[in-house]
Structure formats: structure tokens, C-alpha cells
Image 1 (cartoon, one colour):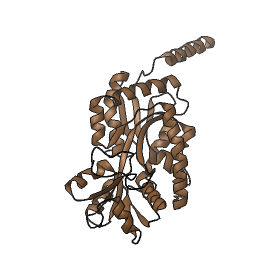
Image 2: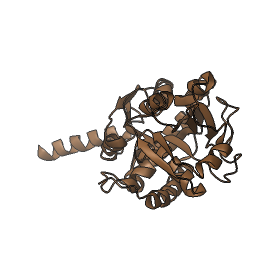
Image 3: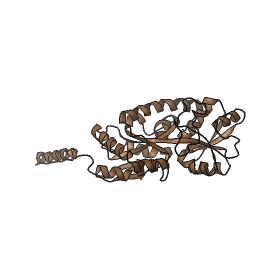
Length: 316
């Protein structure tokens, strides 16, 4: 009797393994609270991706510890393609250098699926700052110390400010906030003179004249604020810092599953409606191959390690 039961169990496991992917709902874990650019980037694609996969795609928020809690949850999930991570560069390539202890390893615990897109960063100033653009600001900052706010210690905007200080020799004091919205509120109110943030957070204030856009750190000018020059145009050769978002799966997820997910996500990102909605978030869609995404992750890990070390940023 027992051999028969073992045979039945074995056949059941084989049948389950043979089911085509996906055969049940897929979850995208967002390691941040609802409403931000990262969270929205996942929600924009979820319904269309679900339609293409033939299964519902559910976005779940698991915030905490600068994204580390939700990211670790995906690292520990079954590598079957049903639990995915909305990866953010701050969590995946900055936190490994900022935090003394991290509950995951970016390269060991995940397999990249595709980069969703790049979010343009912008340096904005309160109108009281006597500079109309980045060139003028850098001249003034040679003799005057300025403080700048960001979404928090170790965030990509924080490190963009550190990199700017390192590249130019100016003195910038970082003021960390719990979110980009709080930082924007204080710069609009004049409590701090500068904020480095995603362009989607700042564009309405720049258009209304409540803030001045000094420069964007993307390779090209943003379609949202075409009058704001890039850092490269302002004389900082090679200064390109975009904040990316992407989809990753637990390590050892089968390559055919990764390939299917990448194919369907790329198709969703190619749709005009998706591109329009991403534009409102300040995101330029990418949808690259897993190998290309992996290459950027490795390069960014090396890049930010140098900046973090020189800035002396450490969270125990």
C-alpha cells in the first residue's frame, strides 16, 4: 500500500511541475508604502501584465527599513516566478554599502528579470537661492555652504548630492527626511534651500514658479521640464544619475519563467498608454534583457560603493 501512495504522490508532484507558468496569481512585492513613484510603477503594469499572463498580478506593499524588509521577503520566497520584487536602485545597489547588516545579498539572492525604467532626478532650489541654474549655483556654492534634503539616508537622491559635492568640491550638508514629499514641503516653505528628488515629485512646483529647477541628472533633458538643463550641459561631464526601478525574482527561478516574464513585461511597457502613464511619473521605460539588467546592477554596486565610502555613510 505504501509504495502505491508514494507513486501517487510522485505522479502528483510531476503533474504539478508540468503545469505551464503561470497557473496561479502572481505577486509583485513593493518594499515601500503605497503612493510613491516606485509603487506606482508596479501598479501601472500589473493589470496589463495579468491580462497577458492569463492570471491576476497583485501588487503588495511591504514597507520598512528603507526597503529591506520587503526585499528580504522576496529573497526567501520560492523560486517559481509567483513572487516578484519591485526592485529600486536605492535598496538593491546602495543599501548593501550603507547598512552594516543586510538580510539579503543583491547578487546571490536574486535574478534580474528586466528594468522597468529610469526616473529622472532633479536638483531644485527655493526662490531665495540666488542662482537660476546649476552653473550659477556651483559658483556661489564655492564660497557658501548649502544644505539639501532627500528622501532619506542612503537614497539615490542623497547619494546624487554626495557625488555632486565630491565632483565639484563644494560643501553640501545632507538633511534626511522620511520621504520625498516631506522634503518637498520644507523646500517650498523655505526651511531648507535645496532638495534632490525625482522629477515627478518636483515638476508641479517648478512649473508654478514655487521652486527653481537647477538641473536634471539624466543623460538628456526631461520632456516634463525641457527648460531645465542637464548636469552634463552645465559642465559636469559624465554626471548621469537616474533612479531605476525593475523586476527581480528569487535566485534559481527557472530561466524559461524569467524569459516569459521579461517578454510580457516588455510588451506592456511598449504600449502607448503605459508609456504615457510612466511619463507622468517621470520614468523613461526600458524593458531590457535580464543579462543587461544584471550588468547594470553589478556596475552600480561598484559605483555607489566608492561614493558611500568617501562620504562615510554607515547605518549600524
